[in-house]
Length: 374
Image (cartoon, rainbow, N blue to C red; front, side):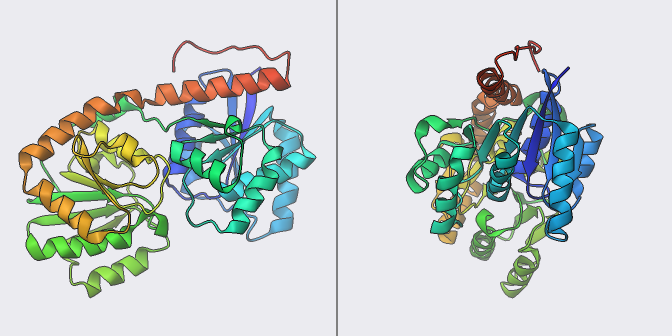
């Protein structure tokens, strides 16, 4: 019988964390584990994708009916009987910690970003409830540092497991270079349209660039709460002919492969998967210093690094690349070589090791039984 792991995550929208959970749960099945996913909010696209991978999933819809959601959660726990729980994002972590008071199952929490949005009260809650979890997995060194500095959590309680991507799968999508989106230079950006991702800064940078170059097209992939605001800002800056919001797309690789440059304008971050995906597609990247991006993107080697929130610096970096086609090409080639160490296989193996170690400590009879490779 496989060991069942319950994964708790707040939202059902698709973003970096949700995609990582899909990748992890769909591959962890190849080991001696059975994943079950629980979201705190309503059913959404996230559940539909999990269904395609035949991953059992539930939703609580706590915002609409908190009491029913809590009762449903108790029922799910008794029905599934997980031997381990892993939670994601602040709301998911706190919910799982409260749950552990009533169900003493080993809990692993997660840190996915530097969470600059948090106020002092959030860090206090993090600190004084951290005893309820066995371990915190951060996807970045920056995330680990912020937990130690702002929440006062002991470094021994935090382990860093970088995000990984399916490099071989991405290679299968590779086609001839060139753009089907625009005849000139195509600059792409991918992510949820929310404050943390810095898309208002990217739009301002695009406005600066468009005054100097008329052959550049900006494509932004993703949905989120700032979509309407960004559309209005684009119209107000009179750059709607040069900047387009494409919304959510099923296969980002088909777009990344036809981008000439990828921009990651984040104000705060953890370890962005889109950076790895863009590198695997052989693209030069312009990114901010947020999170662990300076460890992924080496300034002047496979991309350019700017300070978060600096639209002019972002525009200058873009013009520098566009004016130097050979530099763009070399940076893209270097990206492909640097991404190899961030494989999905490595990430899954590290999680398996963490799960096995915790279960061995909590359940002495637990035996390691897994395949040699993903």
